Length: 220
Image 1 (tube, rainbow, N blue to C red):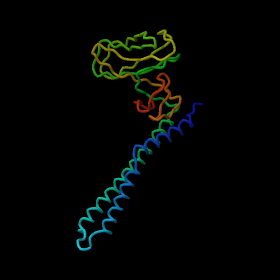
Image 2 (image 1 turned 180 degrees about the vertical axis):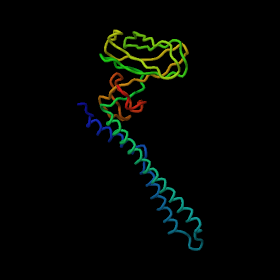
Image 3 (image 1 turned 90 degrees about the horizontal axis):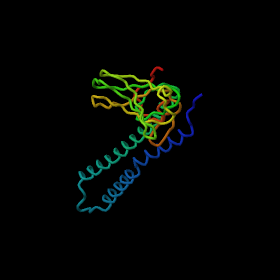
Image 4 (image 1 turned 90 degrees about the vertical axis):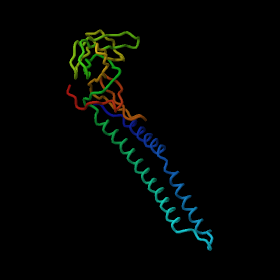
């Protein structure tokens, strides 16, 4: 049974929360508010009794202090929302283990299994080619033939193409000059939590950031 690395999730969540707190520094706002109150109290205490400060000025200063407090509350709320969003994203990614997803990729992890995917063309093309490039720079071209605008599905059979297991860069060439993104369907084997967010291990695609998912629940 496939499991999610709980230890990795814990460390990533803590690290992400610390990064958010560091980005939204509330201590500076609190210090500014305290200094402001101290200055206003000193101003009232040491004002000239024969020429007291206009009450309107006190009201303006109090209004400014209230604005500082409001800004601090908004910063605190924004911080909490960022933490909540990060945790929800992690939980959502963890729930995808064992599920079929479609992800946008620039490389494929070729093994023995057939890799299925699609491209989305905006223009008709008389010739469309899927180009796979291995680590040594050797290119393998898969002819997809003429295509109409819209989705065009493809299958990569490593045995039929004589592809050795490994990582391959993938791109699309067409006589229309269009270079659409490649989308691959695969099962999620596990989820790893990193400082940049959840990373999915997808069959046929390898490590894919969570934000590269373009479709959930794709049928096998």
